[in-house]
Length: 250
Ligand SMILES: [Zn+2]
Image (cartoon, rainbow, N blue to C red):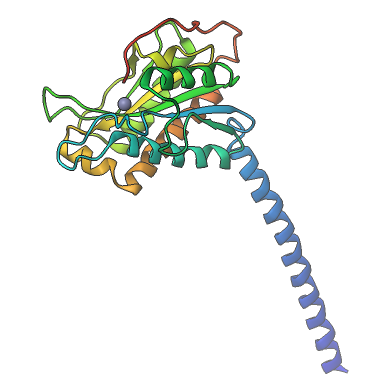
């Protein structure tokens, strides 16, 4: 009888354990799902335009030592950024997602990008570039530009700049600044232009070609954007500056 009683006891313990494991499983799935959803609550549903600068016959800046083309790095970073945003539930519109030409010449190319941005209804536009400084090979560090008078653009630029400085630890930590660039004036959506680093600086030229470094850039831009969406002045309906004619190309 005692033996039978022990089995009964053991059965109860096993049943209890199975129920506990089952409940834990349900809780874990529920908790993780909610955690995942809440992790990107700021990004979910947003429309982001990503603009990888240059492309096709327009190479952009050329690396001093390796002759790498800026357009290639821009596209690589942009595609990584696209994946991060899409994974977070955003809709991403790319001005280009390959090295195919967008239009028959540079002016037409830029105009096509502007129209796409203007009609996108985007919450934020992010243009990706790499820098080059002919005066000195020592110039270094990513820098984020925004359009003069765009409060939202300035805020987004500030957060992205801070994240880039923190995650990339560049030789020189730059500050976000006003840029007089054509793409920054392409519509009502706030727009930032990210110069990811200098192709005239040997160290950064090497790093910018590394997939792991490109991952860091994309993740810094993404993190800064998340901060922007979580703290932006609750969409004061203030109009962003309208597009103004021509200006510099980055
Ligand atoms: Zn460029």
